[in-house]
Amino acid sequence: MKSYFRSFLLLLLLLLSHEMHGKEIILVTYDYKSDKMLMIKNIIEEKLLVPRKLITYLKTKSPCLKNKDTILHICIKENNEKIIFQNNEVLRKSFKSFSRK
Image (cartoon, rainbow, N blue to C red):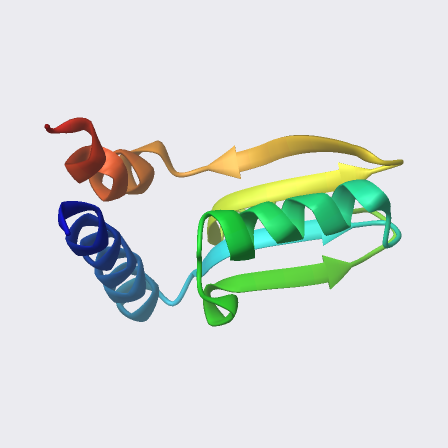
């Protein structure tokens, strides 16, 4: 029961942050739809249960260009993933509840 409550708090915090700052929560950019991209999509949506409306998938020729208007930016280029940007303060506050036991 606690894990559902913590997950709810995390998503609520992410939603509020999104509304207040107008930022994308998770941005996944890629150069082509590869197995790696589909795997990351599966992990984010099905394993972590992040709602689809909090994630933006963007196919582009230059997927690893930095975008600071997001909380987490994951780049997939030539089937290799890389975290381009993460807002540590927001992520730390969001996941703080998970570190308490």
